[in-house]
Length: 167
Image (cartoon, rainbow, N blue to C red):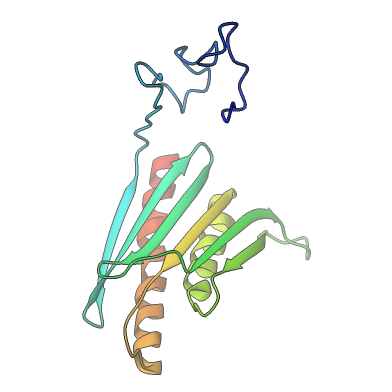
């Protein structure tokens, strides 16, 4: 059974193009040996300490687009995944986004993921996927506000780094 989506060679083994270099500049490494492709894109890392936990954030460029991952250092998980795509505003002024959300039942991570995905997508005029999973046992409404504020505080640093990179 082939799971790669690429044509197998005539001997029925690995795909015929497995060891060739990709034509995409973003995928410059080859699948030598065991066929594993590795990419080392530049990534941006951020940390915020709040409510006794450390919130971690990684932003990975993917061509013109970005993947953003947000989690805590103790019990990180995927609670919400958000895709935001930049588009011209329906008012005719500026850039807006169209957003799709997948939430894990019982999780409230959407607000963080949606905010970061929409903000980065609109400012960078691209598509952004943001996953978020922050857990704090017995969290209070005040702690939720503190975590949301800390995560919103990441956006300035993220946008500054990404815009500087595009210059």
